Image 1 (cartoon, rainbow, N blue to C red):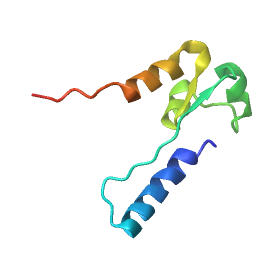
Image 2 (cartoon, one colour):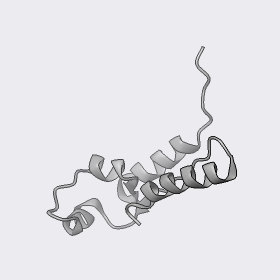
Image 3 (cartoon, rainbow, N blue to C red):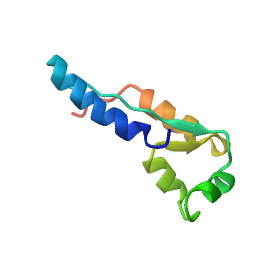
Length: 81
């Protein structure tokens, strides 16, 4: 699950090229119900920061970070002037 966003990015390029489509994009995010302090113990040496998890599209429900990030992703984009 942790690397799903990476695999989907690869697949979107492959599928888009195969079908002759441009701007195909697939992505995934995880909002963990497991608290950060618990989950980080299960990652290798336990050194991942919240930013390291976020860089891998993993957010934590406990801090509202996951919800805030999902809201940001689905918010209408403002056109720059």
